[in-house]
Image 1: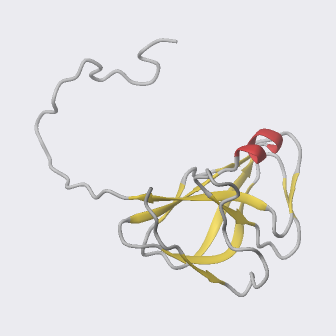
Image 2: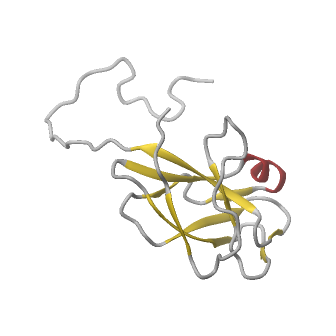
Amino acid sequence: MDRVVLKVKRLDNNPDLPLPSYESGGSSGLDLRAAVVKKVTLRPGEIMLIPTGLSISLPKGYEAQIRPRSGLALRYGLGLVNSPGTIDADYRGEVGVIAINWGKKPLTIRRGERIAQVVISKVSRARVEEVDELDATKRGKGGFGHSGT
């Protein structure tokens, strides 16, 4: 297992909330908390940028992936519009969570609630090479649903 240093800077809107943390020994993601000033309500189908009050610095060759928390998704329908969201190693702005309420009832988000998780992953850089033909495969151009049920 790789161990990298995730540098975290508190912003003015987050002098008090816990830093991202792994909630169990086997967790892949660090939990992120809502740094909303007062509680906000997400109506069904509504999209909102939820601040975390944090900026991060990653080592070169890594990214941070923002992902939904499964319990919130199951219980309330809370999802992320761009899941997973990517934070590049050279981004230094505030980490935000682009949340959507996929549920049927309004959802209230309170300050300090764990609203998403961040997974740190290695990144590969591709060398793009234009070709006239691609290698053949058994699947070929088969797309969505090509293999049946």
